[in-house]
Image (cartoon, rainbow, N blue to C red):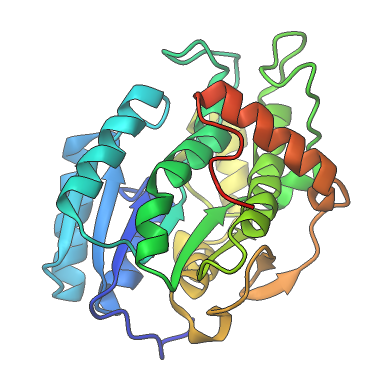
Length: 288
């Protein structure tokens, strides 16, 4: 991990910060001196993780803010609350994600995996963009996955209504993360705000809790620790080496090529327009 970064005075948001990669990302950024806002859904788990990080780092500039990323109203509430209480935002790490074995819908009537893993990133980022621009140079880090290579954006079945597979829905959502990163980078050109996506590696996190126990145990045998998995997130959030790099996909702290569909600008632009429609934002919310 790059330990030369000095994050003193920087304000960072990490979503899904109470466990797995998110918790380690928050820990490492706190260790580098950043003020870290841990965004969690569950207060008790969030407070426990925050106490552990404070003890491990000696950094008291940690804050817990609650947000249910499956609810668009709650994302709006959180963004408004954050902007009302924080004059700047240097780094946004979109990390929170879900894996659903069976199709479920959110309070907004959207398929849960797509809603949390993609639209959650899309809406939260867009609502915080004005603050990120005012704080530039600033960074957005989107945690995607190598699973994106098995994904496909089917605009006729975005919500998995015609056919649903938990694994497929997860892969599609991670492809959407990379396409979102690509299109957002294009729209943010010249603003001083960078955005990159990453594959953390096959990591043993709680996201696979919904799997049958024997399969969950098997996955843990072949996966790395969240400590190793968080390295690329922390690198993209803090390393001087990537300060001006944007619109790229990283694996093990190095630039990599995602799948062909993940590099399709036409699909990226169409997905942006559809995501804007589903979240009630104007498609041209970010100036070209």
